[in-house]
Length: 401
Image (cartoon, rainbow, N blue to C red; front, side, top):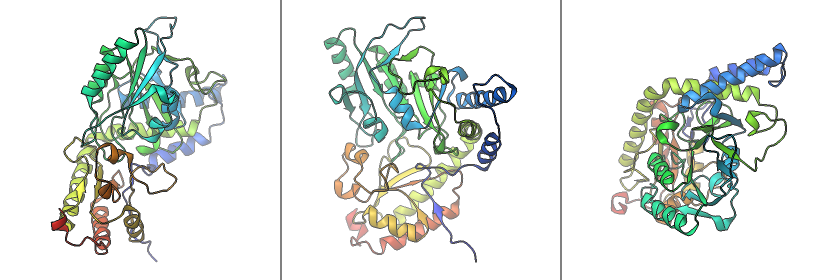
């Protein structure tokens, strides 16, 4: 008996682990040494971690010494987004200038919106336009006012490089330049962008970015903080103890996970250009198929520059919860947006921030492609979606458009 055909189109939630990654992790699991030990076994484990550090740095255009490993993107973001973050300006002694304002993008992942460590009174959302792009005019005006009203204080600005629901790519380099003009620090959650588009932290100009392995073929439960320079310090590090990871994250390192992250970063970097073209063509084929099935189907953020693998869409009258169940039964795995909501289907804060009609956002689905995706997956999904549309109470799709 053959297995039922399934199309996995939820790579933004988790990309399947690449075989090379799993093999490297299996070898690392058998390494007996603690990376902090000085004997041969310990040195071998340390060498494996430092190799992974080099691989992650290469993916981001950074120096290996500026990479710190964490348990994932959520921990990395929560660690950094703190009033205790400070810039040492390259000197030996850090004179702490309190970060007394956090400005974060209105369409950020929940681990930024809700996971930061600033008091609510010190955090503000940066508005976006109807395509989901950050309003940099608003940002500059806000930073100018903050600088005038709070001499000597510092702001921290956080904007993701690409949105997890729509794939919209943000003007992070421009944001970082504005932040520098007003003495603000800048951070970018690059979790969804890593492995899908080229990242150069020096070209972006942000002080620090974060990423997570399971978004580009690595294992779950491991991520990284990547600094542009070595000048940042943190007065309230949440993980203290043995001094691992340059004191940024205490605790014995997750050797197999870190090795897997490194191999995944290496593979993603080497395949980046070709995969971007391939996935972009498949994404365009998917969206053309949706338009053929129902001209009323809207693609959110379509006029903006997007990740090549991501499409967020909705058809009037078709509810997301109903559609996801029908698609799953038909062998197509999609999402209604972020996968970090305990399996619940709820209204998207991303689409709300973009001003999308709630009636449309109630039907929003996300298809996200990856290294396992092929043309047959797109065709299988379109067939499944056609069946879902057959139950749609809004039958006159041309009129609905």
